[in-house]
Length: 490
Image: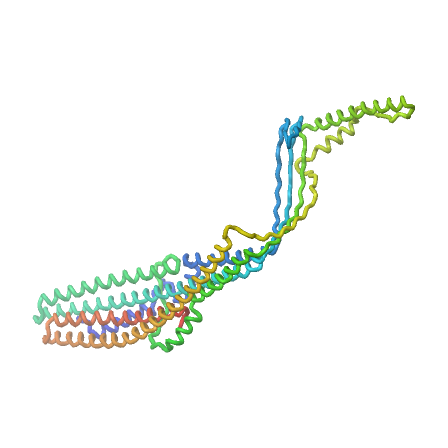
């Protein structure tokens, strides 16, 4: 039996409603807000922008850290073979290998005009980074919204094409029934079969496009696509209720791209002041602690040296004693020419200093004020580059402000056009539906040939597709206006 056109349109409405509001039991729900939230958590491009926040925070901490002293420490150890060494024309001979160690702990403090400017500069850079992140978040929201609308539109179009397949099947049944009673021809049946095949191809293509659009949506989200998903957000088609001037004012005040360039301009201004601070003096303070240890690997070497010195001292003492005795004076008492075991142990113990029994170096404190006078025009170059960067930031901001006004104006006009188009497309679809119904009725009673039905059917199909596309074109135009303004408007 032939499926009446009214029944086909009821099926069309049911299919589109299913695409926008129904679901299968196993399909996870996904609203637009959920998609945007998931994208901000998983989109790799956006997350790559967010990582700049940590670098900006670290730069601010480093700028404030310039007000703190820097600490440095070192420890070294060495080995020196026995032998002769020449130092400043003098020859020093060592009869034993030696090991040495050294430690130092230094404190340095430097202060200049740049120390006071850098925190403000880095905070301005951090503000610019935050503004850039906000701008990228808005870009991501716009991309996800566009992909979400494209997926909804593709699913609705697939539902429409499925309904048109049902309509083509009903038309084929009518053609066969008329041929069975002698009122139709095999050409009518063949044409109906071709029409059905074309509708089935269009339905397959539409379902494939819907699947690809969902995959594209999840690419924007940054997650693997589930086996099936149900898009739950619906959009109202209402006339624009705002004025162009208010939208332009809102965009100039809140557009993330404009805000990011304003932050960059402020950072560039601080960059000029930072470059100019290179003409100011710098105060540097430094102090430190250190120590050394020097140990002979052969402890008996010092004992032998001390024994040799004791023998020489004993011989000198004997000579002096004999002179005093000859002069009738009392002797001095020279003692023993050899070291006692306790003295030798003490010498060996004093040699046991490697690596941590240091002899501390004297404390020193230094203060320096430096003022660079001429550095080959490097400071002048740095200042001019900073000024050029500031001027470029101002030009980019002005260009973006003009571009934003143009984008808002164009998006607003496109939205109005899209809304007016919906009414015209709806009117065309209603007329095409009536013409198709009339052609079917005339063909049923034998007052029209099948070519008339085919022509009316093609017009009807195109009008329905255009009507559906106009609805989603309006939603996309609304999303484009939100993107131009830089914030949601509904």
